[in-house]
Length: 157
Image (cartoon, rainbow, N blue to C red; front, top):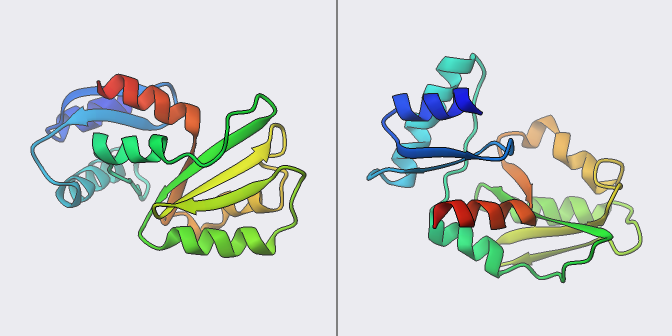
């Protein structure tokens, strides 16, 4: 993650730090999200020689992800929120509705955010979990365990 932080710094971002090895970078800038997306995707793509897809969220937007979690925490379950392009939550819900489901596996859309609850140990084995690797959707979304949102918000404060 140190390399990624360095790319962000060289692209003009301030107060750059990473959150775990989650691929999340917290930083400050006076540019808007649209400008940042263009600048940072180019910088990442150039540095790492791959096509980078980033989702830029403000502290306020990140707080909405945390505040809108529709499921209660349970030590036997993972809860994920999906960050993505506008409308991807509906694509994800269509995929989820068509998938076979494990016991206690659920999905809801709250405030245009797709949330998924799945039993621990079933994330990648679940029928819906296979969508996470779909090439046709790779530039449309990313998912994060809700615990990551808590860590991101702590770092933002």
